[in-house]
Image (cartoon, rainbow, N blue to C red):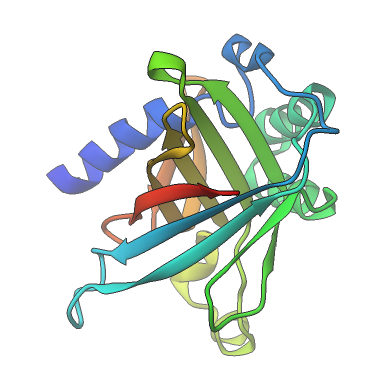
Length: 196
């Protein structure tokens, strides 16, 4: 395994071990909280065919995934695997959306918040990944990477940074959730800022 992929797996395993389970997720704001909007500058460092691509990304969180919803998703994954998890995630009601200025919004299906350092917070978002007709009919290896996962680390003022793994495969390794990216590196989210 390439060192960069090992580092990515370790980093993401730590960040996403709490994605679908774990006692640390007991901290959760009620689902009836106000809508939150974030804007970030995304840089795709994994784009090897050209210069790194960059642009604005807008993320909206309408509500948070509940503990029972999270527990059911984790149970599905543990007992039936990633394909069943994908179906269960697609059946979840939208919790928010993600979009770029030149695209339609795409629904997010999972949103959890955890306490961060120094009074900040971490936000974990997940959804199925948009798959076009050409990709779906080609039988491409990229179809094995159907999830999109976002991690944002924010300070008290709602500013921070994060990562966006667009095409990801979820794996359980000794009961720890690990992400494997189709690309060599996730998209880096710089200058995240909560919109007022």
